[in-house]
Amino acid sequence: MRPAVIAAMRGERGGVGAAALRAGLSALVPFYAAAVAGRNTLFDWGLRRPRSLGRPVVSVGNLSTGGTGKTPMVIEMVRRLQALGARPAVLLRGYRAGAGGSDEAAVLSGELGPAVPIAADPSRVRAAEAVLAANPDVSVFVLDDGFQHRQVQRDLDLVLIDATDPLATAHLLPRGFLREPADNLRRASAVIITRADAAAGPDLADLDRLVTALHGREPVAHAAHRWSGLRTGSGDGVPVDGLRGQEVLAVCGIGNPGPFLAMVRAACAGCEALTFGDHHAYTESDMAGIAARARQGSCGAIVTTEKDWVKWSALPRGPALLAGAPPVYRPILTIEMLDGSDALTQLLRMFGRGS
Image (cartoon, rainbow, N blue to C red; front, side, top):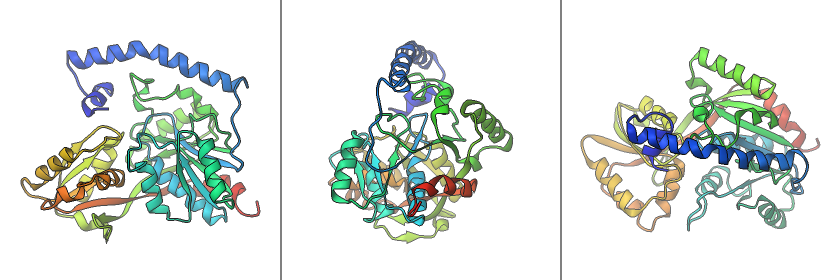
């Protein structure tokens, strides 16, 4: 989806054209809402039943499309499960996977290593069967982006809500970014507030009260996204302060670029932003344009996300087109639990060895 369309949906663009777009999208919402309600009713009434994957399932999902920080949270859950003695595998849908595969799967593989099987397939049942055939010692599946994937039976349903964009404009698709009504949050086992450090105290308190009203329980934890370091284009590590004093070009194609850009701006002397739509399929023309933009002025570095870098690297001449441009850095994004860490571990303990 193009950034201009996203800005119009969020109400960040004025004018007759943007207003007409919002009105047209609003007219489609009842049809989407009816389809979602009908599908959920089938599962709620037992007319459709979720399938077992043969192992316990921990789902990490959200109410909205993209941008809540699922990938680093999945990594955090996998590492916590490993610490409890479990042998986890990750299943994800592989949304908009190109010829080089899923960018999320590539990021997860790079962070978790070969010890954690990862499978991207719209059919999580099929993916689970393939994983277990090759890795029968897997003891638990972590479902990436699984809250709406009700075809799969899960034992723990974690839902993330981004404190910087809590209910994704509070409109259902296609007018807003909610995949289903907010009161469906009651279906979740627990709610985690992400990017909680970026919200003002009163705003966070209001969000906690809203979640408690919708879910029936307070959020189990509040988390922050942190940079633990930077990676260069070759994969070498650089201290997190490596951008200090530099002018940078920040480039991303993600669902909610605001928090990423804010973190870039906090780490450098000045930032020019170049944003693309969520899950943007980069072309060599895009890469040449990024390189040309970065060569202008006093830009000392290009900063992008790990998911974007995976797509750049998959292009036949992607990194080569950046030759002569400033160096590329990718932040190493980690999750820090501000509170609720012990409560979260307790929820996961049932999946540990000997539980």
